[in-house]
Image (cartoon, rainbow, N blue to C red; front, side):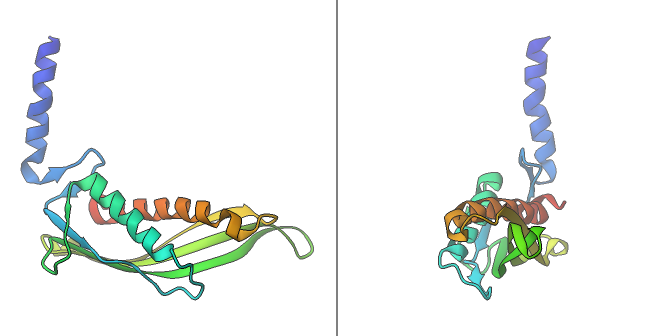
Length: 166
């Protein structure tokens, strides 16, 4: 009985792949390659490494979950461009009159995604995420960790929109 179940698994995987490629992340991939352009930093406050960090996070998430081949040509099956439009710190909580207890780092990324196989899946959208930190902390001391966390969330959101269509 156990042997029959083991034979059923490859059959199911083959059956599911008939209409495209499905990854274990739930992504539907019909293409073979993607051109992910370096994201520009157009935010008013510029962190020198932010554009590279965000581009790498998004690229890593997409490439690790889809099996797509990265290319640098204009005729790729998928094409993604983007820009960081917001890098802002704001107060989110106060303990008394004009005394901040929590601050928030907010990042927004404008993404344009072109699916040359299914143009209905094209989109241009701004993705925004944030992370709170204690106001007693100096931003430069927690900035790398905050950017890491926010970058992971943004990469997940962009991946899901492009390939899982959540």
